[in-house]
Length: 193
Image (cartoon, rainbow, N blue to C red; front, side):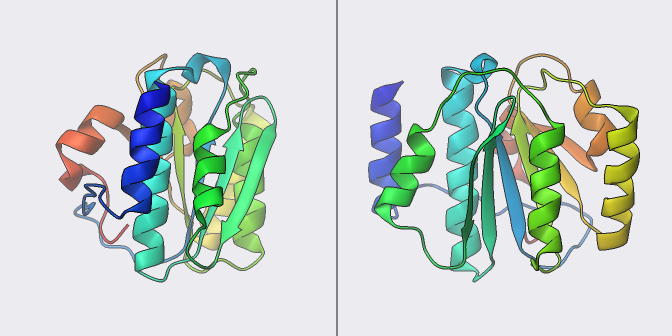
């Protein structure tokens, strides 16, 4: 997998990545967004590569459209957070691609951090949540998070990277997409995102 990371970084830096225009029947604005990437132990290997490729491709796409973007990488804790208001440096890209902690998993912490980032001033922001789905969330958290979503009109699109169950993701997401569908049929994702 290290050779895939190097190839990805090289292509990303050279602007040679094949990116997709993501669409859905439901129209939304071209707002800012926060990408949460699961870097827990269960994501090791191909799942990690897919998750980071999706995150970096979204970063590239958002910055070309002059949309603000933030990355939240997590396991049982939030391990990395960075807001991008301008194109990332090669060092930023390498840093995102290389971070892997392999710890446990907690969905509540990254979603809380993402909601804080949005509340601090991202406009029409949505959350892209990339994981293999191995985790649970409390009812108290779900109730508070749903209130936040309603108040801010935030949507959560989860990309399920083959793994466990989508059931937890369905509890807080507006849409759950399998990473294979994300790549094979990009019309299933969302408009202008």
